[in-house]
Length: 308
Image (cartoon, rainbow, N blue to C red):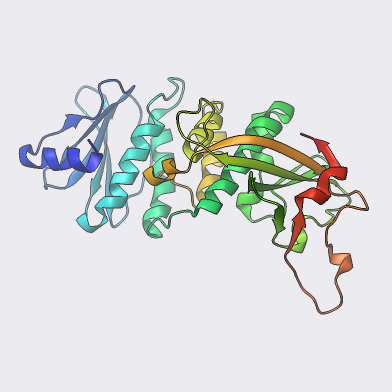
C-alpha cells in the first residue's frame, strides 16, 4: 500500500497510525486537529531551531513525558504529491539511523533540503543527470574514500559547487564522466573540464554502467549508492555537507528514480596531462573563441590508461 493510500485510509478515522512496526523510530501518519495531513515523530531529544514554509507547517514541542513531538503538516492539499515524496524520503532515510546520531538534528537537516524542493516545485532529475550523479558518488566511494578518508574526500567533491573539476585534492584533480556500456564517445562540455589547473596533475575518469534489474546482487540505484556513503558518515557536520552537495545538484528522493537500475562495469582512469592526450585547452583556442564542447573517442584513450 502506498503512502497516499494509507493517508486516504486514515482520513475516515482522523487518527494517527504508526508507519512501520519494524522502523527504528516512532513515525506516525494521520490528520491533525485541523484535518490536515500530518507526519509525526515521537523521539527523545532537545529543542532545535526550525522553519516552516507556506506549504508545510513544522512543529517541535515537548510532551508531558519529556519526549519531543515533531510534526510536518500539509497546509495546501494541492501539494500533497510532493508532501508524500518528502514523507517517504524522511521515513526511509531514518529507517536504520545510527543511534549515535542526533535524530532531530538529522531530520531537520533533511527538512531544510526539502524546503528547497518545495520552493522549486521539485524538478526531477533526468536519466542522464542520475547516471552522472551515480558516477560521481561511485568514484567517491570506490576511489576517493579508500585513499583519502571520508572527510577529505567529501570536502574535495567540487562538482556540486559549480567548480570546473569534479574533485580536487592535494596536487591532483579528477573529471568524472559516466557512460553506457555501448557508448563509443565521452562528451566534454567545456574547455575548463580538461584544462590545466595551476599545473596540477589531472585525470579523466570514465565510469561505465550497464542496465540491469534488482535480481542482480550488485545492482545500483541512485538511492542505494548514496545510502552506502551516508552510512559511513558519523559526523553530523560532514553529513550536512554531503547532503547539501546532493541538494545543490537537485537530488531529493523520488520513487521513480528506483526504475533506473544499473550495474558497474568498470572505472577507467586516464592521464589527461600526457602531451598526446586528445583534448582542447584554452591555449589551443583562437582569439575570439570563448568556449567549445567536443567528443572524444573511447578507442583513442587506450594509450593513456592509468588504472582500471
